[in-house]
Amino acid sequence: MGVRPHFPQKTGRRRPGGDGGGRGGRGGRTRSEQGRDPHPRPTPDLHPRPAPETLTYFRRALEALKEAPETGEERELLIHNVLKELEPQAQALATDRVGSGMLQELLSCSPPGPLSRLLAALLPHLRSVACHRSGAHVLQSVLLRLPRFPAALAKKEEGDVKDGDAGTLEELVLKLASEVRDALVLYSGDTHGSFVVRTLLQVLGGTILESEMARPRGPQSLGEAAAPVREWKPANFEVPETFLSCLQELSSCFLKDISVFITDKVSSFCLQVALQVLHRKLPKACARLCDSVIKYLSTRNSAADGSPLLLFLRDQTSSRLLEQVLLVSEPPWLQNLFENHFQGQLQALASHPIANFPLQRLLDAITTPQLLSQVFEELSPALEAILAQGHTGVIIALVGACRRVGTHQAQILQLLLEAFHCAEPPSRQVACVPLFGSLTAYEVYYELEEEDVPSEHKVEVAVARPLGEMTVPGSLLLQHLLHFSTPGPVLRSLTSMEGAQLLALAQSPAGSHVLDAVLTSSTLTRKQRRKVLRPLKGHYVALACSRHGSRVLDAIWNEATLGNRKEIAAELGEQNQELMRDPFGHHVARNVALSSFLKRPRDWEQQQEAVAKRRKALSAILGD
Image 1 (cartoon, rainbow, N blue to C red):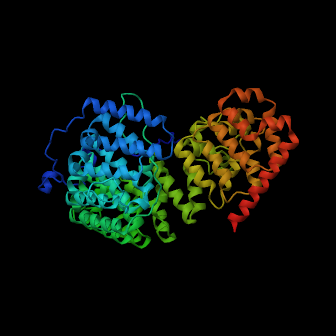
Image 2 (image 1 turned 180 degrees about the horizontal axis):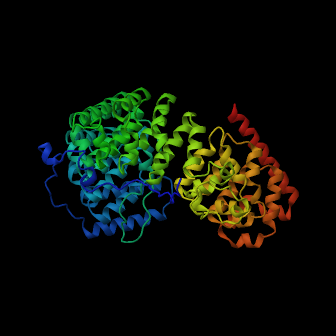
């Protein structure tokens, strides 16, 4: 066996292609082939501009709001009055870059009444606002504020609307949804309008997706590097039955124009969000959409080497949609999908630059031993080739499936040892952690010449060598392996590492998470954890003064017994001044209560005993 090169890393998601052409062009139809533009743009109109004095007033109002109490009637009254004053110019402000940013800042702390006024003022101009770069952000901010006031959705705020010409928040959201439903293809296909559609789907379903919770929102309003507005968004919240009924109607609209939502990149994002929301709230509607997607794709572009679906798995746009279909599929449906479309093609998909991503989602969705066995049997012979191609995400997903389902763990670990050339002779297995973590074969890592017969592992050489760079994919791989029922070789490799090497692992951005897995794995005993972490004794100060090492030390401290805590505190206390001068060390010293330990050791010990008792009692309650 020849010397393998350093395994390339390609686990990051590919960027969306501009128009779905090039590599993925075969998978979807062009607009000309569909015979019509899937989402005609609205007729351009000149957006009104807010008067300069309005922007000046708005800016002063925001400055006054910053000086007002954070809660209370005074603050709510100020917000109410400002939005009431600006209501006639709501459209102009929403579609102005500066005005939009200031509106979002105000909305971030608005009570429900002013939300109703603003939404009512924007609805007559919905198309021009939703399809505008700045206006779309304002509508999203309004919608994402609603989860904070579930009880106010059906309540009409007194004095907030005139003669009933607007309505409750619930009625206003349903009116917005009705207009979007009647022109769903247009809004979903617009670059900015699609964000409004996606947010609306989540609000109607009473669930805010993780991707939405992490996304910064809004332009920087005052020409300076302002922080993005932070929204309060729970993952799930109660919504009226009318919202779910409206969501059901929107799902039918997706079915009616399924070809557009599958083949157009921007529209496809809306269908992907719809699948995620429906999977949580209306699983039957989600299943119908999944069926429609697969049936449509299965009737397009016959493939000589298997299912027509294979062509779309290689396409930029439709492959992303298929990823979501796989993730929301129920086990029986997923088994059927595999047998009809994937079986016999996994190695080809794993080697493709685009299709390997849907394959990763298939692996992520596996929950049954039967399906995992079929997939494992087909993929396992090509494991080293997949690594050499740089598609480590496929291997990580396969290892994750073995961890989750609980089968084929010993086989996948043995295959990894063979792929990194440390299975034989057995003495090489002790080097698997640095090899897996750096995604490097044994001969390359230790800079050996090509050998006909693999040489024995030289412990003295391994001890003298600094730890290689830990990669993110390699760290993820090790984290999965440490949660296996029997992570023997990985555990032995960790316990063989010297203090300096373990310190380098803890100080590494990616490697520090490997030690997190050591501390959290349910398959490792306390004795095994202590054996792994023992070499860090004498390096606690270096850990404390490191960005990532200090986090590892905090985790070790939280799991430590009183005796271990005394040892850690005593070692840190010898360098107390150095710790207090370091920003990370200062945090650790406070967490350890180092000042109390040095000045009042008896009080410190009693405090730690009390903390230990509370933790033990809490663990017993949670255990029950």
